[in-house]
Image 1 (cartoon, rainbow, N blue to C red):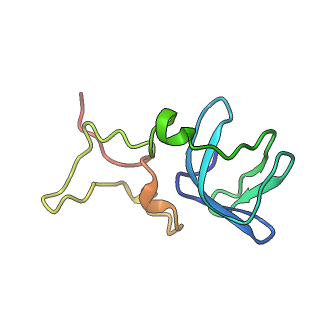
Image 2: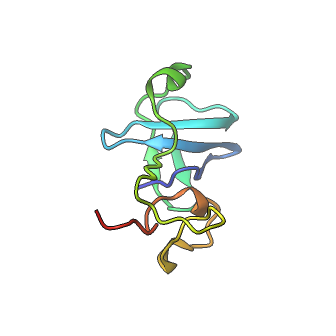
Length: 108
């Protein structure tokens, strides 16, 4: 599974993953170069390889798709506003700060 804000590549073309969904939809942004249906992209951090079955440039993202997958309800926050995370959160990968897994939540 790709990571939020992870860089994807195809040759000299790069972009970032804004969000992804269980149905296989991947919303990307900051596209530098060109992509088209049938291209195979590689994710820098996760190593995921994805074939773009369909590719559409659209402004629908602003209307229909939510931003990063942050559900901060119940996340433990320090006095300085930083989230509390388990050691497993700190991967050293560029997309680390955009991931919500391994953040500490309060018990419900």
